[in-house]
Amino acid sequence: MKFTDITVARAIPASAEKVFDVWIDPKSPGGPWFGSDRVILNPVVDGLFYLGVKHEGRTWPHYGRFLQIDRPRCVEYTWMSEATKGAESIVTVTMEARGEETEVTLRHSGVPDDEMGRQHKEGWTWVLSALAESLASRRSASSSD
Image (cartoon, rainbow, N blue to C red; front, side, top):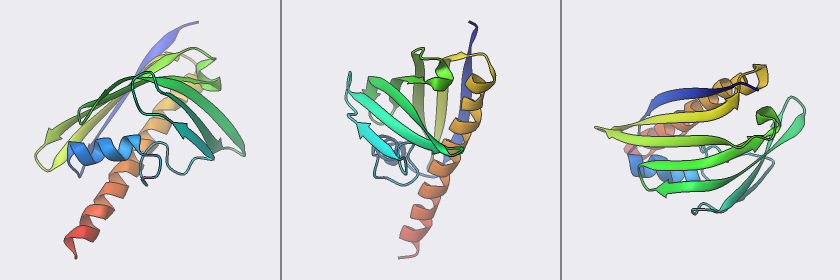
């Protein structure tokens, strides 16, 4: 089986600390775990996670373990799902402060180079968009107080 790497990036209107905190908190709107059917998350090195994502009328289970947690710069974890054919792929999320924004770069390596594997790019792009929208709305809400 051939594998590929997927990289998506987005400027997020918040500090790296705020982006990091939302990323690892399943109760924070805009984070990758938020709104899932079921989430079990232990965000420490070697901590495990389970994520049940509803899509196309069914729940898609995702599993992994955290490899690196370096607030506010990086979160890295393994990622296994039906779309990875059970192979342990690796998601690396880096956060780099750029003035009042944070450049978030997500690299998903070891993804099967097939249609289901490549669909991760669409999924991760959606996750970064949701993160940006959530943090932008929080910023505008707090600045209007």
